[in-house]
Length: 258
Image 1 (cartoon, one colour):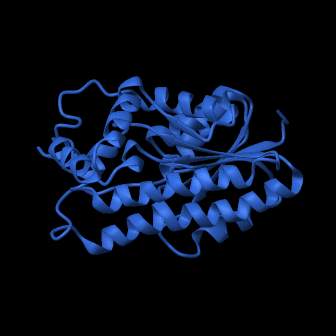
Image 2 (cartoon, helix red, strand yellow):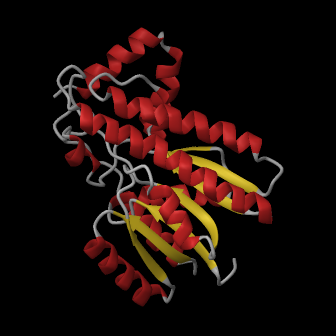
Image 3 (cartoon, one colour):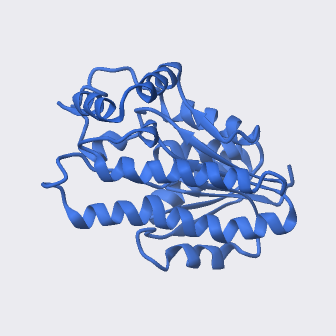
């Protein structure tokens, strides 16, 4: 690991992204932290830099905006970005006929478009020098149709399919792509998505964002294509993939309901 290596981490102001920043820093990797809230980012960067002795750079960007990925790349293209972590993402809960279209278009812009564009820019640099690692945040929802979170899970289906395809394309280049697929996590996601009271999470002991971050980092460093966090999550995905798709969707809806 080179002292000049950097990791770009989107959605780094909290949850899994914030913990991934510490996991990288603990291993001597410099950081480029990306999120919308500068004050939270700067506080995180200062704490991490002081604790681990790494450089921590802050980029305030709203990745739902079309030009944001290119602007990020332009700011850091002269640095040696060895790791790209496309962690930023959010969801929404409710019947599609009732949910907010603007919010759902932002979900698509962030979860799909920004991730794809950032990967395009950085993978070209990585393949040119013959090494680099990309970690994309999927979900257990990457494997199913998810009534009540239809748009969110559809975007995570894309992340998984895109990551797996790219992983195979890059097999002999020295660059790896890993899709981390956690189940429900104690990260603040449920609150933002308005589904804290669903059967899926209410009253459950959820894994911490630090546990998921450490698991994802290890999988990325091993060059795994797909990393599903948690024995229960892996078992549930296995069972539901055996079920007819309509039955699987109905089971998901039952679990999603309050």
